[in-house]
Length: 72
Image 1 (tube, rainbow, N blue to C red):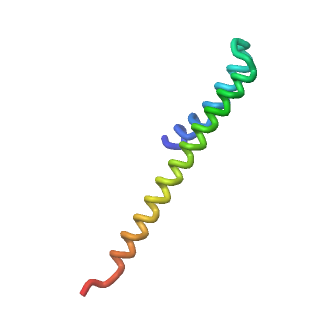
Image 2 (cartoon, one colour):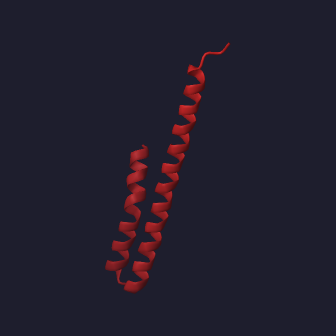
Image 3 (cartoon, one colour):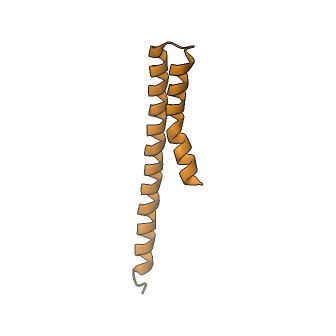
């Protein structure tokens, strides 16, 4: 399910860009501006997910290390 959501989020800027180019209702410069804005959103979302994964991994590592140490 998460892979499907990731694919949809990654495909969204491409779909919006192609729609803007072929519909002809917008100028090309505005279509490129919208495309760049959508790409920025996707990049920030990916960086956020990587950050969450990193925080989770570090937390799990610390938790596992605490469980391995002998308690007197």
